[in-house]
Length: 403
Image 1 (spheres, rainbow, N blue to C red):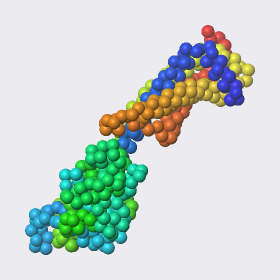
Image 2: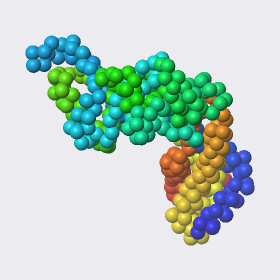
Image 3: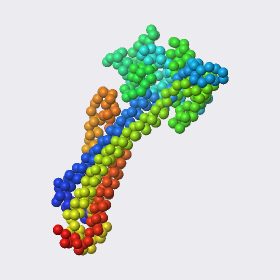
Image 4: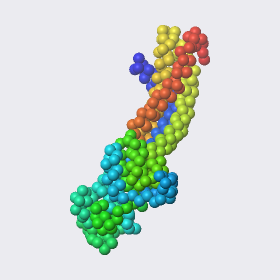
């Protein structure tokens, strides 16, 4: 049966080349609109999420603030100063914390004392030939330095930085690694590409400071983030004597909530762009339906003869539905291939403009392709079912007199 339907479609294609070609082109154009809008929307969503994650993945950045509520007779406006001891207290008191470190800023180059976990939290991965600060550096208070890629370029130009000596406040430090280049659209104290970090123990030995700029807390999982956040206020509130509900006492940069919000906004943009493209494709589907009505009208005598010699109505309906779906799928396949070529070409164009990370970053994924194929099948069915029912309802006697 399918062979007969295909032969009939090819025969109709040969007799009505221009009409069928234009109809397929309408489906191709509609598919291109859907696929490219979804691909660019997905690229925008991923770029925004990656820019945020590269500044900090699954972390809370906790700062010492000022009390905003009276607590146990203590006045408002008291300064909360976080210390290294807070770090150990939190690790002992909150089992849902995966890792925690303190961070402090000293110079205009954003030099900080950090722990080895900083690499994963801030996605500061060393490029080939170097390494990040490790546990032995921390235990031995080594004077080693890890540089952001941009500050390394400014200091050393074309010279390989690893193994070179840099003077920090008059003290020599050995460069052990340089950060891989990454896209980042959020930061504290400047982007990581301009950051220089040393072991936290070395920082304390040199500068002798007990208070820290802020703590970076990483929950074991996203599900436990809410528990960790409330426990932070409880534990530190008890230690520094402030109300656990006083949000002003502990200003916090919540990367987890920011990531959820960013994902929701990106998904909303993608859905909007997909709907615009889908309506464009729907217009093409209306064109297919109109063409099929014309085909039914032109082939009324043929339909009547088939019914007269014993063809059943389901066969007549299948013929026109098959043609409508085949037009939709062939046109859609051409649109998918063209869109894939455009996505590949755009991604291959090099650009150092940060704005292009959002715009020229289309992603053609399998879910997008499957959504488009599903829409094409649905439009093909809708475009073919009414003309097919009309064809199957033709009276054989009347159709033979049709001119």
